[in-house]
Image (cartoon, rainbow, N blue to C red):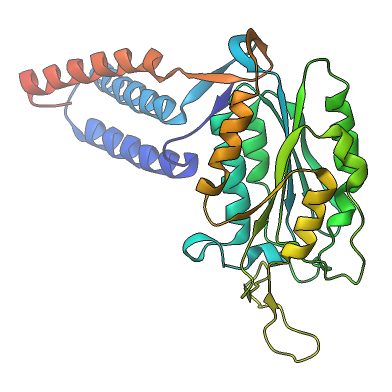
Length: 318
């Protein structure tokens, strides 16, 4: 069970609390018997309580659904270094927005596949192992934050090699599965290291792409709290540029396409090819679905409001 409030709970509590106090005051100052006042206050409390419950959007969880399952494991590896916050993706958006667009579009179009997510900057981190619960992977994407100056230490795609290898190996051990890798980065290596070969991963990969985000002209980068990244040699704002040479070399190592991302249209052909190469079967998913429960409370609220309207019309009072 989870809640997804329509109005933030503190705001709803304050507004409904004020309405309750106002209603109680109006009831108390009227010249009625005490039991009539008590009933009026109870009606107000019930109405506002039901409104509060409906606003909470309490949702029940359902597991083990019968769904269409694809024989496809899709691994996203996303560069999350500060250069991915340069704003030379589509319409002046950040490179990271391009990366998340790729993931969101792939998840939407290839529902029924299993997905996993790795991010890398100074270090590599598995945000989600392979799962059919696409919502958990989408949620994991939202946890990626802009690096602070104290944390950023340069770019190095080599740091994710071991995590990628572990996840790709686990997928390759499954009978009848196809393993797809989307490696998304601007290709820069700025920590002084040399690019390592990704060729050892090629035998575990059945398809996918290395996706370059950014421009060769480059763009400025900002840290989490608004400071621009400075060039240590000049003291001026640093400019990050797409390094397609590195990315194409990684694509050659993996024997997959290199795609320069300008919009998600650039990956449409690849998604269609993955669809065409996937087989579909019915089965139990480990994904979670949620059902709204507000309609349980709505009929009672409507009845109380109708009753209240009748009382007001008939007696012209609470």
